[in-house]
Image 1 (spheres, one colour):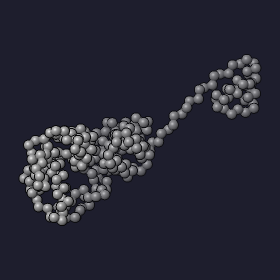
Image 2 (spheres, one colour; image 1 turned 90 degrees about the horizontal axis):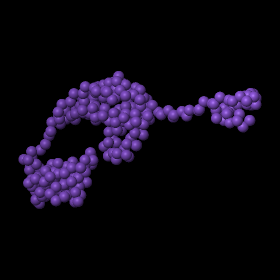
Image 3 (cartoon, one colour; image 1 turned 120 degrees about the horizontal axis):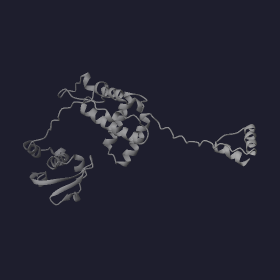
Image 4 (cartoon, helix red, strand yellow; image 1 turned 180 degrees about the vertical axis):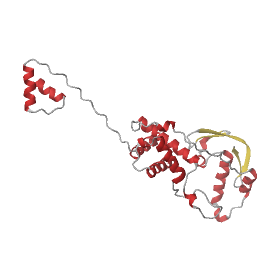
Length: 264
């Protein structure tokens, strides 16, 4: 009888009295019961909703990779784009056709919160200034989307691999590098600032220092005395986390009535 009950326990069956009696009589006759099929544990089905998974991706990768605020903002913008593009979207929706439609939405239909360009110095905008992203911006969004989909694939949420071979044609023009000439920098350095706006002197100092050192404002803001190593500056950039060295040249400028040799 213990063997009979053990059988029903293994098979996770709640037997009736008749079933117990039948199997008990077979055991008395010496019949060996067939080994019950092992009960396979079902793997939990992970959510297929993109937006439901996206927050987990942001929480895990953001903490693991020490994202800066700008990265969180870009991911929040991508999440908003996905939600506006296709409500309750699933990973299966992002096949080649779905990705193409998403690109078309970003390029032709997306409504911008702020105008994309100004008409000269006037605060006048046309309707087309409030729609469409540039191809360079769309490409960046697709890179962020691929990052998320790679994470979702590794964690068992996504089985749709269309994004790995999706290569839309997004033509971009080379960006024009805009910079101040030495004469313009000298003009800014020598500009007389009104006494009531003396705080702008510090603003100008920092701006000129960034121009001559090549540092971003965020890196200049975090600069400490121990970052100056003899004749050069060594910093880890805030934006990319890269370690850079700014080498000094003979460039010397006068900041607020004092001569300072700046690395270039």
